[in-house]
Length: 169
Image (tube, rainbow, N blue to C red; front, side):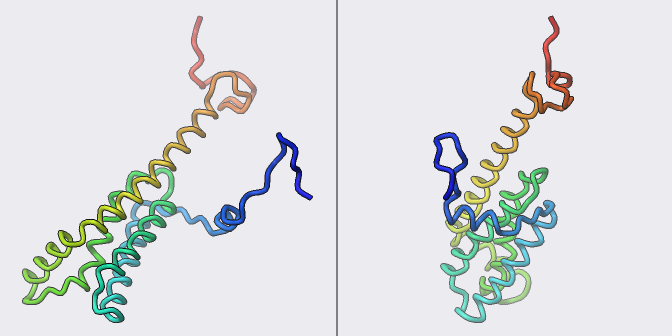
C-alpha cells in the first residue's frame, strides 16, 4: 500500500507516469528544425495524397509537431523552438498549396496559403512559445535553487556560499 502520510511521497497520476516513461530526446536547434521540417513535409505530402490537401488536417497535425519540437529541443536552444515551427509549417505547406506555373506561381501559392492558414500557424507557434516559456522558467528556478547563498548543494559543494553571490561585509 502506498505511503499516505501528509509529508510522504504521493503516487503520480497514471497520465503523468505514462508521460515520464516516454523517451526524452534533446535536439539541438538545427536538429529540432530538421525534425519539424521533415515531419511537416511528410504530413504535407500525405495530406495531399490521402485527403487532397485538407487545411484542417494539416493544421491539426501541426499543433502536436509544434509541441514535440518545443519539448524535445535542448535547454540551451529553447529560444529556437518558436522560430523553428513557423519555418516547418512553411516547408510542409508547399505540397498542399497548389501552385502552378513555375517558381513564381508556386511562391505565390505558398504565400497565399500562409495568409489563409495563419490561424493554424499562430496557434502552433503559440503552443511552442508557451511550452518553451514554461521550460525556461523551470530551468531558471532550478538554477536559482542551486546557487542560493547558504545552500549546502551550492556550486562549492561544501556548504559555503562561495561562487553563489555572497555579499562582503
